[in-house]
Length: 428
Picture (cartoon, rainbow, N blue to C red):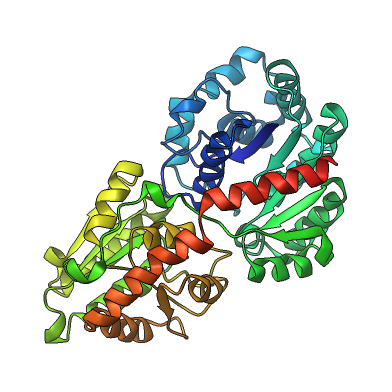
């Protein structure tokens, strides 16, 4: 089977869960003997995707933004686009403020969802023409529902079914103004007619998107995310130094400030004097002031030596991070559709401590390798961390359960086989 994944890139400036999800599927599907290609949009893919260097970045973020802002540039010659779409320039753009947030990009989001009727119609034709020439697929898989504007044209020109993943679209859409938010959800609902199957990463998010996009239950399949356990080094957390880890984009939405405040509270107990906090996951320039505020709080509390910010978060450095950390917490303020960092941590034998929001309880209950602590406040999080870090037998048991939970419930090789079965169904 020949499969195309169409994926918005992050430029590698921060830990991108959706990018990592698609890459995990990519490698597992290749192992199953299928021919699969990743096609990046907007920005280059995550740093571990060097094998994808021969595929151009379509809808390059720099030229897309300039053409939207200055319409006369839409008639610029091809060399202009080529110059702006070089991967080094796109990676530089990914680090800049506003490159990965909805504010200021509402009109462009609506235009993208309009597909061949939108102002990016030429970009869509370029991508389809490239696919026709270089890789004619049997099925096209869109990374998220914000790409649904491309579905109709892809399906009609390539003559293949289109499948679409659902993960955290609400994070992008729901921060918009009331009018734009309503328009985007309505467009996504309309464009859903061009999709043969939707795949939600959790039951929680399936229910949410049925409501937001007015979808029927039979249109959405739940397929939890996963990682390959063989790629992760299991060390029981009970034998490590007592430490807390954070692995996600370092921003307020992902709750780094909640964890920072919880850690300061945790350290006030003499039993926790030796506990450290490791923070990794990258950022954009939008996050610089916020990160400085967290570092100042830590310094004012006299804990600078106990908090280590790790700049690199590629595969090699994440494994170093996992070897050091005994408990992981990413207290996302409004919860999340899944959180693939949970699967990565648990595969390494690291229990997770998460707020009872979004899909977190669903994932923790399925794996058994962690606890959810109810209300997402620093005090509640500090209490939960204190409980698990000071109960060695609990830490040891949860570490074993975490690894086993990934092997049995969140193994990407099993999930990839289920995904192939779904592709076969829509092809039939």
